[in-house]
Length: 514
Image (tube, rainbow, N blue to C red; front, side, top):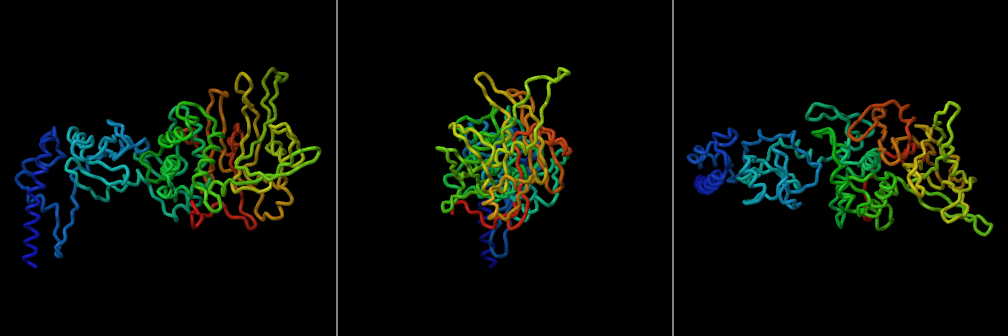
């Protein structure tokens, strides 16, 4: 055993000569000396004590095995305030998206870590030595190119790629949790501001609305995007974005949806992109279709989208003096707003009209007749109630010249919206679930039709409070402010009742492909 240990020590000592020579040669390429950079090792010490230094780095166990962990002396140079992982993972020099590393000192992205790569050159020229691989989260010290393993870096790894347990996800709707940013500000995970990247407020309200829907949120937080083949950039970036929004270890307390917006812009052929104001209703519908087509089961053709928003209505159509009926699926109900008055009152003031949401829901009472796009008379009746009811209050109409906005204020209940009067009697017998809904979020439009913007009111279920999210600005508001807004999109959550499935129950198995 003694001879074996001596042989191992001799082998390590021989290896130390080689490694020490490599370290020495790499240190010569650095621009600053040890005197100029107090965080670096003294060059003379490293040259005269190669073997001793290496023996300090390597530990030999009695069983003749060696642990290759190295204590990095540069961890104190890491600047967490400059780290931002929300933007596209591209090299800041070559613009390549392959083998990208983030400099943990300045926050810039560089390609590769081998000799003559951009990351290697940056380390030598700027004396920035600690880099993290943005794909596998491994951290290296360059230009020496050794792996760094230290528990003090776990917060950076969690900031880049947060992970969630099923137990934590189950408690999101019941337990109040607060996070603290590096600057000391408090934030509520899941209810944080999103950066406006130039006319992207319509993106932000759709993202924040999805985060209010427990079924979608829980699914995305647990989804393994590696199982999706071929890979879908929209789903991949959406999952990463939702995880960042609910990350309690967020360094900034805000999130920039840049990568998700870029992916949607490419996938939609430029229909929804940064710099061009869009319609959140159209974006939400497009996103529902995209997620459903990529995540549906091959056996049942169901997806998390159909489970959350899948409803049905019966359409009665007058054809040859006879009413014919057919059942059609829906994920969103569109309600027509009564025309606004064109005259002023006796005081020469413009009148802001009001209407009840029940007046708008009369469209589905089975008696009110409407003219379809094909010119035929139709009546509507709800057949199957979804877990989450998405309502589009149609405020905008386009004539031959410009876009018009109907400013009518729609009054609505924030709790116990009852749809029993609009549910077909035949379907009601088979549906033992509740017909009542509670509001979870309300998207409203403010300003003119062309120059206005969107914001969202969300209900924080654990605390019962309402928050106004206007891009980066998050404000606690009273429920009365929500009811007085110019609602454009509303999402209601079905109450528990009868044998209906509770919306906040998580599925044990996530069936993506059957």
